[in-house]
Image 1: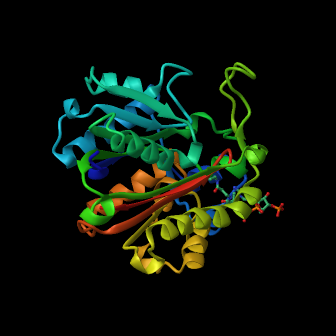
Image 2: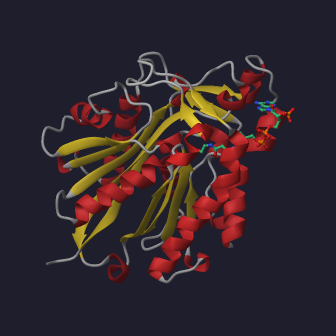
Length: 325
Ligand code: UT7
């Protein structure tokens, strides 16, 4: 049997037009720009317009990725969309994106792993492509967290935002490590014992309401660095690489302090660390592809560059994906 690998053909992202700055939030809750910047590194977040849904953000990010890859929507036969804020309880938002892109072949489904959604989606798409079940996959992380925030709760509403990003993966023959491009290692973990530290207090089966995000921020923070550095180390161990070999570190954008502490613990030098959290806050599953797209569009990435994507979030779930661009 021929061996297949998943190679990135392009990426794209989308942020809604409307922004809310820290100074805007000062007028809404008892907070300050200084507190938010110091504790999280966030300066502003984007918020979807009325009537603008997760599928709209996802479709715009997907269209940008198709343009970047020089492909048509009809070239895609798999859509894996990570979101914790779907348009509806069902059908899957991925299927709505498929419809909006005008695709009627192949298949589409959602992944629910909250902030780790994008690494879960990449890992899932990679497995389908390597298994020969699809040829070209759109992997999307898209969220409208503004719709599940309690805007009177200063401990959460200042941290999150809306946004989407997408990557296109193609199944190509050959082993990723030997060919110099493609996904080389995926590590996923979860532990439901941490549910109460970050969850939404509603849902179709429990309350029949959408609910609001609730978080014990300090508790999440305490676990974050250890969990992400653990899965990153597992990627290094699996591939026989070290932090020195990395060209780029593209972490989940939740908090500048978590990113800095993780990079420091692993010995990844600051110039390799991509930080966009200041400009869009925590966009959950959207944050890694947003950061990745900003890096790629800056023109600094070369073919074959080694990248580490990582995230940790509600569940808890956490994971890392290592790839050669
Ligand atoms: O994507 C994964 C999900 N989430 C995360 O990764 C978030 C992880 N956690 C964090 O990023 C940080 O824990 C936070 C940014 C949420 C908070 O930072 P912290 O340094 O852990 O602060 P804290 O929760 O210990 O709060 C310190 C103080 C408290 O006051 P007291 O009890 O010391 O009097 C809070 O009530 O800051 C207060 N506080 C605020 N003050 C001004 C909490 N929220 C705010 C606020 N503005 N927005």
